[in-house]
Image (cartoon, rainbow, N blue to C red; front, side, top):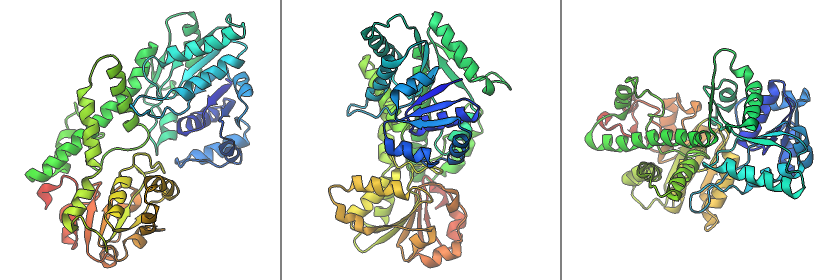
Length: 456
């Protein structure tokens, strides 16, 4: 089946590459010529395990095409996936300008029936807007008789595991209209996703608005679990409980389970912050206040400062002359995504308090340089005190303390004797609870976790 992917960002590139790997001829469109040139050369603009290899394999097999040619993209695909960005506006709502521009181009050039798939995360009612824009363009051309269908097919890809998530989905949500073109589109989408349903049926068919809502509801629930556990962890520190033991006790209840119950430094990335804000904004447009989500956002914003508070609680707010090592820059492991990363809050606070910072991350340094250049546009000279190191141990040399922000595997079993010898003082602020407090203290470390109150 001929497939067009509009947008070669995170979602579009993973979706297009994986569909090509299943044997479909896939045309990936982007307006960024530099990115298209990179992709045509076998390069990948994002870090995602396994993705670069799949891109190269499917380029070689001539199943994958990257281009800036809009008209050719519309001509190619029987199914047109819209996978462009939906950044947050100042009021928290999702900015749909790129989605609607993609829809307008489809209406401008289509010559026969198309299935238009909203793959981007979009608010409830977006399909109606996409449909109206396409119809408007068709009417301008005097081709209002051409039929099409708009389908909602939200993505459920975790950064760092996106290829596996796409190839082994736990569910495929399809939102279709209850009419003739909707039935035709559903048949096309079932055929496209048939390889994923051979073992058992994974497709959940529903109306379009429910499908659009499902994506936001899922991310809001996961964000809620994270913020709830972080709030409990802060209380555990005060009452002398160990949040890790509490997590195990909670998670063993099958009604709760273990997923997304880890305390830490707050969530980041491109999805949870944006989607929680967009869902709250949608509610406001309909005259409803989502009080729980308001609390989720507030708790998360505060949690990003938890390591700052622990550091200044130990060393004071004036940090001039101090050096701190930071392990982990990306908002989570197995990605180079620095959007809303808690490391930006910690490092920003340390630098502005006069400290020097030596940071390490296995893959995110390039993106981190861009992120901190934006964060310190008002005081670029402070970046002279930020060093990016090539190894975790290089970062800790003569540091007053180590702060762990991202739970990369490379940080989970360090040589403790060497670590202690390299640090100026054996102080660790563990924002991801990678280690057991009692064993770390037995090894001679002054160890501070998140919510590990009973392990002091």
